[in-house]
Image 1 (tube, helix red, strand yellow):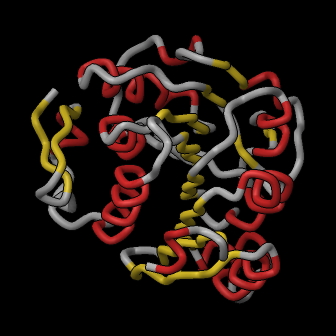
Image 2 (cartoon, rainbow, N blue to C red; image 1 turned 135 degrees about the horizontal axis):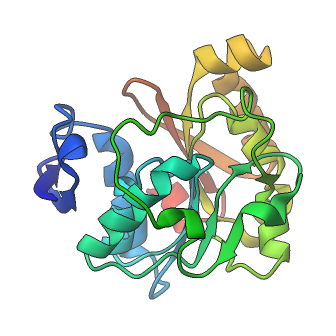
Length: 243
């Protein structure tokens, strides 16, 4: 593990292959700054952040280091040893919940991937750099659930939902309708317009998600385009919506 500065502001110990990414000085800086602001200023002692599409776990590790309790969704079983290694070397609390699968608009063998508290069994293995990626369009065989279902199962409701899901953003939100209405989390969405168009036939994902969230009483805030479109949606009654 190598000491790594993210955006020149926050330090993490990361595996060598991850440390060597040249983008760390600027990668998703606007989105991370906004998330840091919400987590660090939220009145809850340990605001609960649900990260949908955790990849190698470095960004949710930052959220944990900022004081959040974190729930992780990541469909690629091969990358979970990397997530656990990053969290343990940085002396972070284990996630409140882990789901080895997709958050989508329906539950399909959803309990197959669920682990409430601690680490799933696939997190115990070798750290590798060539783990690859999974998306729900190509891998319908991987377990799926909804955010609403896991909240109904007793997982702590999110104060923040953040997602990076390769064009399936609309599916995640469709499966979180009750959570949006009953718990009013801040929502950060990284939109992939080309994937939404090519894989799901949605010509303008940002417009579609904006309309959906506005109808649910959320105020959109465009953060930046940084290899994808980053948006922040605040409930219209939220203090953050007025800042």
